[in-house]
Length: 328
Image (cartoon, rainbow, N blue to C red):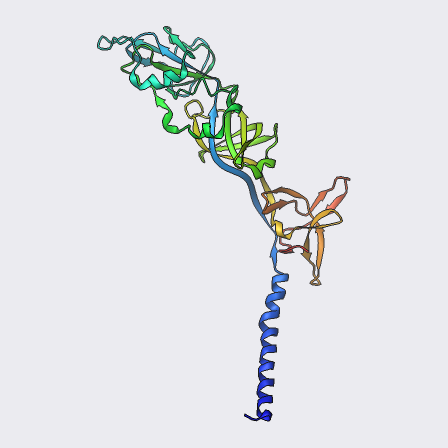
């Protein structure tokens, strides 16, 4: 092909390349740089999900004889000191003066930390449960901080034994009283979330996805292996607290509503956090914001206006404002 014929073809191909860049490439690049979103109201809950280990002040009562139990108090009921919990009806077919085999391991762990009772009354005010797991003496509010994550990980729901009403032998556990004035939930959260928790701060705990209780951060302690021990103290009543030792929990440090924005859009100007909001003329203006809560990826911010530390009213982002997804 002659040079004269090649030049128009090359010119045509070059023109096509320029048109392709103008039509496809430039809008894509500028769109990436100027991608926006519309600010809208939402909810942001900051939480960790993990196993929770229940720690209580609790006393196990054992039978002074053998027989069958006629229970007067239901599982989970709160009783006063001196309340009669049950009556043991003697059974001539069972005259054993040794505890039942199924409770020997539990009683070995409890040692002498049980109360032998003939009257079957509560020695103190508390919540009644007809279950034991043998950790009542060694896992207490006084010892819980000294236990390791490895120790807690060995606790299982299956360790809890229900106490029978019949075929009770002398020395068998027959009921337990748990102090409900204060009880504790021990958790292990990622160490990079430790800053979410401060001793004395209020906290909510969602138990088994069904019941939410209020509490206070009792202790925060490094536990190694990328984990932090978190202990929550609570006085709220949870029906299963006296019987349960291990439960799935969600520790909630913040539950906020407001304008929900991605953290990638937050910039700083002269030490002030803000976002770039599209104006009517198409330009983007830096607009100060007040962050209410963040989970590290998204934030809830105050809308319309807020008062700064100097008492000055500051105009901020409004609902449906158009914001740059990536700050400058």
